Length: 484
Image (tube, rainbow, N blue to C red):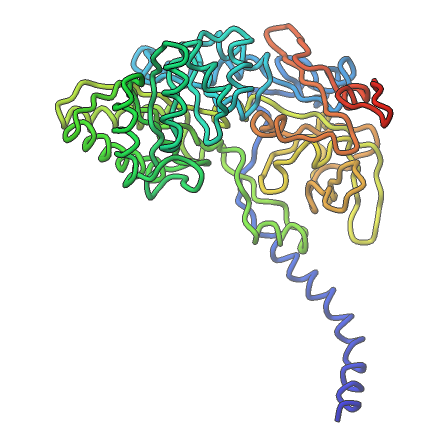
């Protein structure tokens, strides 16, 4: 019986081997025919092309910037950065502020970017001793600094108390006594808030659950050295709808009402965190990824008009808090937001060059000088890619696999991407790299790229590209001698 079954299977195998590619091809054709119908043009990011088809940032071709400053190269658009800051801070009638904005330093901790935001009136939201030190080092006033985070060191707490920052947001009960001890040692008081999580917000190691948070508020008040002035909430990432925004805000304002009406607190600050989604990037689904890998379907192109705009995010948040406070007959608190991705993601791009190409029966490969070591977001996010120099009338009819330069099988940025015919030396521009790309990049086999600010006719290298000696600058040899 077994041998007969084996003979049947052996006879069927050649048929299956012929049918499987045909079926896969047919499925792939059907899958590829489905499209979102969306298109994204350079103008969405404030860029344009000249008559020759060269992509330009503030009038300068990207390829010229790379020729002058080397590549791969992060390019920061200073005008876009100032625009976003103004949109957060001037969303009210006649451009008046409705909220205060504190930029999430972990999102893109490039000192030059942070300084530019500070000059625009955006404060600093830090989550570590290093980030606190950095904010002070680049000249941010202490009263413009918020210190959050689940793992504050004693040294970081001491520095915050010593310098008198705007507020330390307590993550859990244990921090109360640590901050109070620093205050007693230094003979100072500290302004604190408590981070509270509800059913609609991030939990885990972040914040104290609402049902336990009252104990933290009371403990902080009883220290005698902590001024409990605020409440902190962070909904989570990729907020793109009114429902995603309003429900957690309502939940935390219910908690505030209980604190103030039943326990005598009078909160000066309601901090609702960040998390605003960027419409031109998104976390793709497992199905999208499968179709890209197996059936040659490009990832769906998002709509630039989807989700909440910065203005929507600010005005909806403000209006909701105002209504709740007016209904209770309470004076309005200061409303703080902590944008990260929503402030800087779409103000930065990465130029990467084709090192070489290869043709296979399955797909053409483009080997780029930037891979997953520099573009970690590609593991789970859609990011739009432009050809830097695109001939007028060029057609996106070539399917490419985009791979990085590292000797690692996972260094595939996209299994299938459609563009015009490209060759060695051509450049691509990856959009929306202004959040979580620079801080999460690695020196896996390659040095990290430089960061260039293009701003009203100026080209400023905010960070030069790493050298090999930079990579080993902290190392010593086996004999204890410096290597660099």
